[in-house]
Length: 138
Image (cartoon, rainbow, N blue to C red; front, side, top):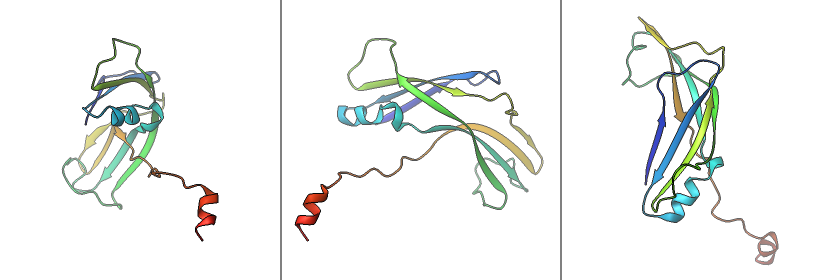
């Protein structure tokens, strides 16, 4: 299963950032489940790092010098562009960029970055047993 997210790299503050997400794979049932708009939790996240490794990108972050804050959430809907293709599902969406959002920057021992991040799915139950059935097996 592959996932591709496309969005523009430069955007005006105070306007929505257009997004397109495409899922490809051979399992049509998995594609149908993943391409439900409410199943995608994409946030615009601001990270603040302090200390000697603040400008580094490949270090393990610690909780006392690295802070994350969600500064926006994306909303998706089924794409109406193009003909549906076998093995592919596309969604269009928008991520609102607030007017108060400051751009990221790097400075010695301090950095602020803004990036889109997918939030993990909440655990979903495989089934919900019937309460009557549970009472009958006790």
